[in-house]
Length: 348
Image (cartoon, rainbow, N blue to C red):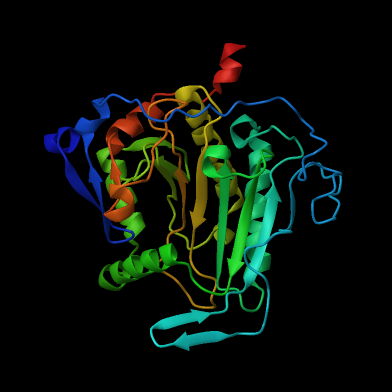
């Protein structure tokens, strides 16, 4: 890699969105006298009577959870999108609006109130992957659903409203902005080259070996060349496929394996229950074939220097474009050097 990329301010291009990010490696030495947040403390509480996601408890909407023993999903009681067949629009001069419809679901990862993915056994993470696939396939077959976003917000720093480990799915009629960007760039590349953009990118990363965090037979976890968040990572399947519904049995196990090992590394980095937002980007379920698409899962963690110092997206990031201090290569090296065993268990 060119020396200036490690030492001097420069821009990096995000080939999936067509956008640029400013990288300023020299700023990582600046003193920090700003906000310090309390680290996310991992508890061992397996059941919380006041938690609306624990088995057997009654949620705020009045519905009672079953005494589930593995994963559990339900329609969000306070959904951002609602199902409707009535389409409405508004336009007055330069002002435009249209109705938005969809289904929002909550996915409880485990009946255990404190069991995050990093602390789960392999089989338990496989249950989560299987639930994602089941929900995706069921929602994709519904009329009026054209895109399905699977995601998790972990920790109060990422706005999580309940500490019980869980994720969400928003299935909607419209295609979200970030997906439209990635759809455009992947389609352009496929039409020009007759093979996938992300597949070619992955091959180059595997040859360079500068940003690889970990890998197994079916997946690779790396820090993207254009990463925005300090320890941002992306999990890419080696076999190009548009959605998670095409994963074979062995690929599902490998997907669970790499997610588990990556989240353990996050916790080990600052020896804390590491906050992040993660999400799976995949092809629209709009009835069209999408040979250009290569699904992937991204993790956006906010922590920068320690368990108490996070990256703030303010100022220049809000008004110009994203900026980061630590290089993608440095972040990848730090994560790759960490053990597969969770720090809390090593201590024992």
